[in-house]
Figure 1: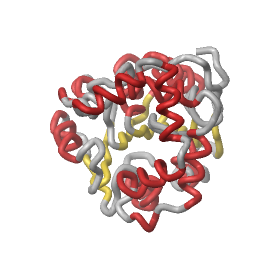
Figure 2 (figure 1 turned 180 degrees about the horizontal axis):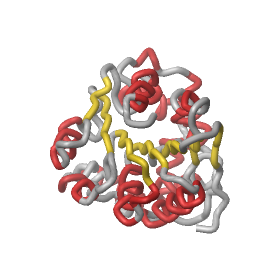
Figure 3 (figure 1 turned 30 degrees about the vertical axis):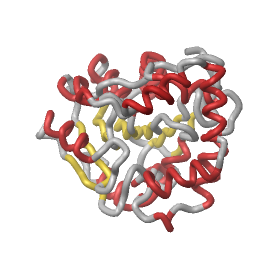
Figure 4 (figure 1 turned 135 degrees about the vertical axis):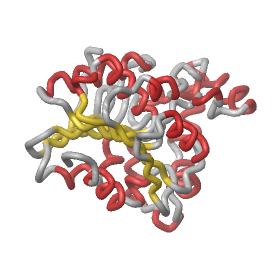
Length: 271
């Protein structure tokens, strides 16, 4: 992809890369309470994927191979293997690249790894597939559907209070504003539609089977959107990988329990 790709970078030393997930309002901002902590000792790189945050928003759908190619170009430029901390669908992009280019990775830290169709279970139930997936498959309808929900403060705030955080009172206006701002960026819907219409939903389980770089997994102990049961079943595919439960958190422990995430990352080798 020859599109403008914004990176936030600080520090020197061994590289550590933080990858945000895919969803309305997502951006590098999600790592704001975690990534800066590593700058005194590491070269910290936090990109906005193309189509998200402050990177260029092309008028086309961004699909799995696009993300993998973008990550490969980024890691190739670093000059040394990186620790990569990936969130949600970005875990799949990183694992796919690690399968083909393991020399680019020092290790992988996987935050709630999911492709939305894991272990034969579609995250969208029958009703959602009939409605959301169908609407999102027609761009003009999908754009209107996106604006109806992701341009509304009440929707984004409600998601954080119900799915994102274990403690509703911990959801601040600052967090909601950051995601709302990015969700309302021009052409942001193009990047959000592929997950909704199924073109970016995949089974992440085979990537666990083929993973050949050091890795660990962490999951919010009260997470319900993907489901802790899915997390445990994925972890069981590779029982030798450390599986950390982050207490008092749901889908966004990096925002609700950043100290626990920092400690968990630091507990790993060479961090």
